Image (cartoon, rainbow, N blue to C red; front, side):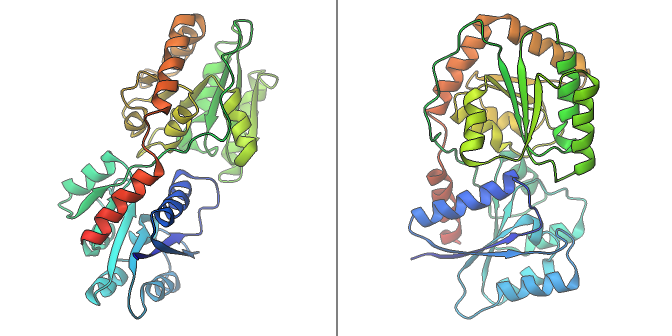
Length: 339
């Protein structure tokens, strides 16, 4: 039996793509027959204090070592600890959720000291290879089947419902979305911003204030972080999902949307374009021209029933061919057992 110890950060407390990936990978590896233990390390990651790095070194120590998979948020600040572990014969794989910058010599040294890299998106893998890092493997996220069947399409009289799932953070740009909604108040729609309001309370407050300022409080809601049946209810209500982050290494929520048969609008130039794929279930939009670009797209989608139906049908088709977490687990096992 393959024994794997995953070392993960405990200082990201909201529902992030990285946290979800880590948890689902552990479950999928176990389902493939691996013995997986999880060690969560609190600390000031990615920099880490001396005490944080000592605890990381302790987590890498032991007798007969298993295979270690370390989240990049921890690994990127601890090259000495990784080099010591690999020098002692341990296999230490770094799970990279974001592309390495190449501008931080500490990060580069840490990744170079690792046995290999598991990258959750093509942009991340390409960035690692451009730095000359070796043993780079792609382990893109899988998708979960919805727990409930999607209801039949609603009638033409029903107002379409937008959803944006993600913590309320400046990078996610919920304020940009709210401002675009304010420009289409003449059309019928409702919207939900589903995500943590605690990750950045000041930005979350600014989002709520912008909703009120634009007079959208009866049409756009912030729900705070949801999971399980409560999140599933939101997906079942949705007709169009948006992920317009300034930066995304992949965008797992895009696959989550498609798995529910919901088309997606993403920001062009981000890793979310990879997640959207070539299914025809949405659009990658260039937002460099400003808010009018998003306004125009939303108006076009709302005003064109044939476009809405085409995207919906494409999303339902995509849901049947998306990779599953068992595929991710198999890719990881092939990589870490071959080294």
